[in-house]
Image (cartoon, rainbow, N blue to C red; front, side, top):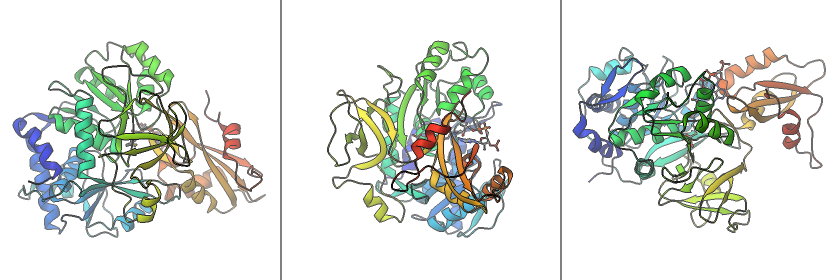
Length: 496
Ligand code: MCA
C-alpha cells in the first residue's frame, strides 16, 4: 500500500464525484470528479515533460482551481511542490529557482527562467498549461511513496536574509490535516469560505486540506475582499483568516450577527489576534473567534478548543500528538507561567531545511525538539500564549518579513550610509514596516528614488510604509543599532 497523500484525499471524495468542490462568487461550480480528472491530466503533462518522483516543481501562479489541481498533480507523481508568493519580483524568484533547481517552473506569466522547463498556467482553462492538460489523456497512476517522503517545500524568510525551504513530509501534512479536521469538528454540512492565498501553509494546507478531507464545497475567492466575503457568509459555515480579515469585516457598516447566521466557526492565525478584535467580533456577531498557532515548519501547533474556552490572547493547547515545552536559553524547561522559547516535537514537525543541514541542526535540540523562535508561556493546564519573538521578525497582514533583507536593499542605494528596519503597530496589517535611514549629507536619495530602487528587488508587501531620515542610528556601547529605541521613537508611525 502506498502512502501517497493524494490517495487519502481521493478516498474521501470518491463517493462524491458529482458534488461541487469549488464554487466561485457567481455560483459557478467545479466538481470533485472534475478536480480528479484535471489533476490526473496535469500529472500526465508533468510526466511527459520528464518530471517525476523527487523532482521539484516551483509554482508562482494566481489562485485558481487549476493551481490546486497542479498541487494535487505533484502529490500524484511524488514531485515536491514549492509554491511562491505571487508578489515576489523576478529577482526574488530567481533565488528560489537557483536554490530548488526545479524540473519545472510553473508561472502565471510567460517568462524565461533558469529551470528544467517553464510552463505557463493562468487563472483559466484558456491558458497554455491548462489547455495542454485538457488535450492530454489523464494519468491516474499514483507514485509509490513512503510517509517520510517530502511532499512540499515552503520557503520562509530567515534572520540571515536568505530564505530557507522548509521540507514538509507526507506524514507532516497528513497528520496535521487529520488532526485539524477532527479538532475543528468538520461535518457533512460544512462549507468553507476560502479567501486566503494558496502559496502559504495557511491557505494551502490548513484550509484546503480540511475541505478536501471533508469532501464538501469550498467557496473559493481569488483573494480577500471584505464585501465579497460578507456576501458569501450566509452560504458558508467556516472561515479561516488572518486578523486583518476580521478587522476589515468589522469596519463594514452594520456588519453583525445577521451576516453570520449560517456560520459555525471563525478561525484566525498567522499573526496575533488583538484581544480587542476578539471582543469586538463577539460583541457584534456573537461568535468567539478561535485562534490557533502555527508556522511553515510545523503547520498547526496549538489551537483553542472548539468546545471549551476560546481565550483571547492565548493560542490554546498543543494538537494531539504534539509535544510542546517552554525552555530557557540553557534548555531547561520553565515553570508554568514563566516565559521562554517554545520548542516542539511531533508528527507535524518538518524534516529540515532544503539543502541546509547545518542550519537545520542549529534549530533542533539534541532530543529532537525544534526551536520555534517564538517566546511563549504555558499555563499549568497546558494552555499556551505567545508573548514575543526571539527573531527580529515583522508580521504584516500575516506575511513574515525579515528586516535584514530590506536593510540590505536600502543600504545598496546610492547615498544611503546605513538603515534600520522595524515593525510598528498598524491598524489594518497589525504591523507595518518603517525604515530609518542615515544618508550622506547633501546626497540623500529622495523617497521616490528609494521606492524605485526597492521595486526591482523586493515584493511590494515588504516595502516600508514610512521612511524616517536621521543623522545617525542610535547605538549601544557595543556599537549595535538599538532597535528597541527606534521602536520607542517611531512605534506610533501609523497611529490613528
Ligand atoms: C498586500 N499588501 C501588503 C500586504 N498585503 N502590505 C503589507 N502586508 C501585507 N500582508 C500591499 C499590496 O501590495 C498593496 O500595495 C497594498 O498593500 C494594499 O493592498 P490591499 O488591497 O489592501 O491588500 P490586500 O491585497 O487586500 O491584502 C491584504 C491581506 C493579504 C488580505 C491581508 O495580505 C492576505 O491575504 N494575507 C494573508 C497572508 C497569509 O496567508 N499568511 C499565511 C502565512 P500597493 O497598493 O501599494 O501596491 S503564515 C502561515 O501559513 C502559518 C503556517 C500560519 O500559522 O498560518
